[in-house]
Image (cartoon, rainbow, N blue to C red; front, top):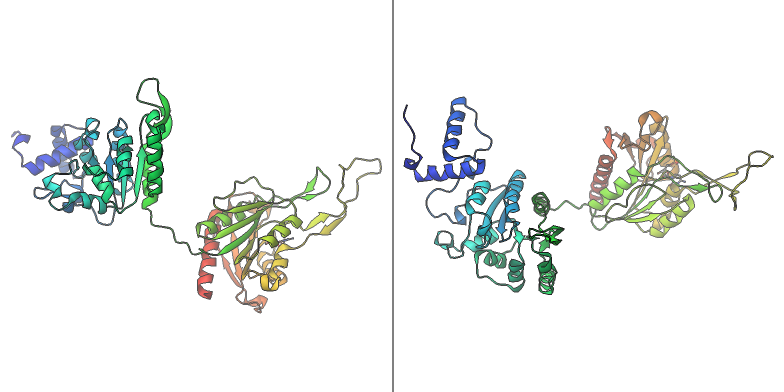
Length: 481
Ligand code: C5P
């Protein structure tokens, strides 16, 4: 049988084999055997580079000869010279897993730690190292590397590279790219803790932050140097990749930008005496989820919540209250609002004869509790007149005749929409994570009960219900604008 001499293969084929075998951790001969085996079995290797990822053929191999699929996000990854550079090889893999194209630039010092060949094999792209490389600089390649990407990541960002950036140096390819950049820059600093804490580095970090550079890390931990620990370790590759993808993600639509949303959530506690109270099983999850969804949609959100075991949603002003009367006062004080959503399970009654001291057991038997009706916050706000928010949404938690009761509630309370849900014990809604709801809408104040539109949603998580409700609100604002 004929034998194959790799040396005699075409140069482009050899280059391809070298890259592919390095990427797969095999010898070139082994790689050839794998390729031939695949051919015979007709099973393509998913790890094989596609035509788009194949190394550039002969000819001007500057950044302009780039072959990645145009639709993918792309990162120029500058690898600085530090021991953490080995983690940058993993970073290339992590970015590619997330469908990000990566073109690597290695500083001179970085090449002491990782080779251009490894970076090239993992990125399936040519690697750039030299500002005065005739192959890429014939058409100002450093400008292209700075601009023909969506994000520049520097990992590891050494103290020296950061100092050069802060002072606008451009005496090598990496610093020239950073100075020419018109794209966001993400730095993953890595250095000895003494270097990180040095006043010169502190000044540079401050300057770079002021210049709009984004930083991830450094983390605290053990250093490569024996017996040294502190802040200076480069963040892990997965964390840097996640931060990069976050920056690359297109900005979320913010349909409620500029709108003030007021939400109530949770139960209320109505005191019997200083230690006892009347409560209900509301967890507050649905109201908190709506607050988070409205905030994510760009609204300025105030959440007035009864006692619950939930963390404040990020970016939301949370006001914690106990009783229905406290809740009403805080809601009134939070007006005006464009949209008010009353998801709280407000106690209908409170104890009129609240004990100033703890009630005692007596021979006379149980102390009589006199109940009085609480203010109805939803009805009060719905009937406010001029200060009434233009869109008022209530909730109807029912255990029977759900739709009929909810329709009657819209009319009685004067709100615009009602989110009706079955809270019978069998539904598991109270305290649970899922919800089955019906959205009842009346458009215009004078519409009769029969003309209320009912839209039944499938079983969803409370977060999904919140997102859908926010989407409906955004749509109705758009329609009425
Ligand atoms: O009358 P019911 O409690 O079923 O009404 C439920 C709706 O009214 C919910 O939106 C709830 O937040 C609101 N409500 C209120 N104040 C009350 C009672 C209910 O805001 N005192």
